[in-house]
Length: 190
Image (cartoon, rainbow, N blue to C red; front, side):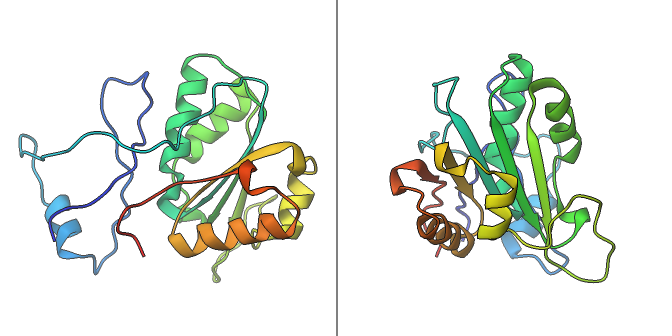
């Protein structure tokens, strides 16, 4: 197929549109074509869709949970908050197989300094030394430890469909009301 859905990684404060894409050595024909593009090549895009956006209530507490390249909408939101100098009470829980897989780490470090973002990384793979302060997994125990006021927060979930579903169930099991959980939506993604 030639049609794909992407989440914008760019902030409304940025001039260029950014997309977050993960490339694998044995990637799909679509990603191989995307990687082979040259400056000046044409891409056809339809309109923006979805409602996975940062709530306007500036006092609301948030917890963002991302898996892999599902970090892209959070990159957009956090970059916007940095650029508008708008601190918000946000904890970012970000899971990847290895530290090398974690995208936008420099931006999140900047956000920790400028807007008070708390970032917790979890690395689930093997064969590397985990950075200090990182978790082995994101689970109910990690959420309760790193976000002790989790019942007061709005949770945003983004990543592979199975991960988003699993975290929705985990949060429900922790007593978080479904109305406090917002999920990124990827049409056609099973």
